Length: 532
Image (cartoon, rainbow, N blue to C red; front, side, top):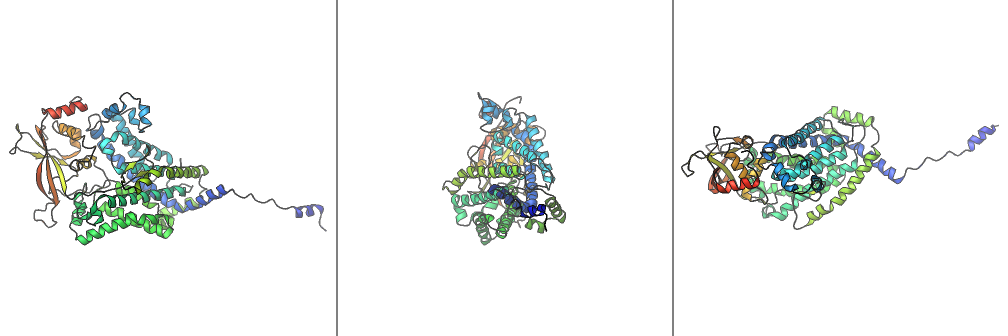
């Protein structure tokens, strides 16, 4: 016979476990999905570190002669003009930058070299949200005062990509494989980014230039792109059927493949491989700065860890597995912040999406001051011929056809027909890129040219450091002129081994000296005289 205590115990109904709220279950589901992206996060952040490193390093090595106190487009003069009678804080909220408060050479060096060091740490495996916030803020500060040198699509794309890296990382834990899983919502936002990049590039081509529609664009592109490489010439002389097939492949990858980045695992993996390999082809076929390396980053978000475990070294896979085994659930605060950021991106995407579907589509445009969601595109028009501006100087008293004219050689821009094209990607020589623009008459550019000529007439050390060769090492020339040449790739089997043939078209800028009134007027009005 049971005791009264036993009867009471048997009749007690155990209390039901609390049912998780719908929101909690949603967060748990997101956390479970994020566990499959530990290696993906590792790869996304390493590539982000690589691109930031190249971007900051090229800026650190070139920005003093480009935007320093004695640079071609001095940042301190630009800041003074923009501020005028306004306070730095008023302008800051319109275009955030520390340089509104201090645009000295020391500040430029501090910003660029700090970014270089931090990005190197991220590249080798140490990254957290704080480090990525600082890098993003430093690069954001460069944009307003970079003027022509920072006017390219990848200079806003790196900011959008970099902010996703901030949201992907734990705030404090800098280890390559943190215990907490990454928020999967941010992985989806990377896919949204690559979708807009690829679709924008594809649509601007179809809407822009007829050569993309009649499949002849690659007849010209390899020869007329900003900075060709040695492989560019080989591709230029490929049969026309090969070139047309390349354009068709371009259209397929940019217009069709991105849609599959939102499908199931196998479709996503295939889409990721196709888009990333397409970027690799572009890397091998030309020197498009760090653009294609940067665009690879969101492609990587198409892969989960089942993909990476097949190709990454075993020790990395093992470390990711150990972090997962010892890991905790993703921070609720991090998940909530990621979800809130996703809602912000949806709202900020309205204008870029309108731009995508517009018949007047603009490429490489920001719609918010922080450049968080932008619109992209590349090569909406293709030049049919390549024209180069060749800067020449002479020490003769009078400049005429019989003078001893000597050419200035840029570091990578075509000049000497016998010089082999360079391989520089992902590094960015910003003066060479800017020097590609004058003949195409891009609006709002070329303000640096008069100062460049003035500095050549004075053998300015900073300006000469941006060039490959100074033909006047002992004393500056008396005159500078700019000639226009038509360049064509020389056939690979040409007898003299030249890479280019060129034909003189005419004079772009007539000979100028330090006594030329027009040049002196421009230099004086722009405030470039300084102590020179």
